Image (cartoon, rainbow, N blue to C red; front, side, top):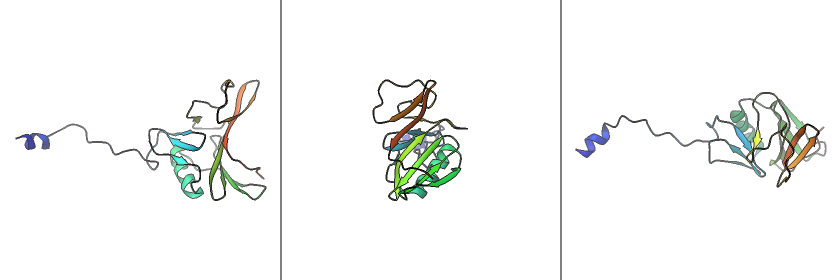
Length: 146
């Protein structure tokens, strides 16, 4: 009888675990990785450019607007209209920069975002600011862009 009752369960079906491919809630930035919101999966530094760009584009709902070569030949950067720039050096993701942008707003996993007051402690981030507050946040390695 217990088997029959279990088969008649009308509750909601279990949800599949979130993944980078279907996590549509957005993206947060960490000192050494990118964190899809609502997922335990991560996009770690060192990941190849093609896979990283595809995953980030799905998460932020837009394709990068430009791929810019590093002027020192070390790699390239991919830049989105939302203010995110990812740096790909030595064949993998090695850093990011967040500036004010259009569309979906982004922040760090610690809640820092451009336009906020300058925090007292920087921790693993490099902040750029003016009298109005944070103008950019950086983590990891970057390169000079052409």
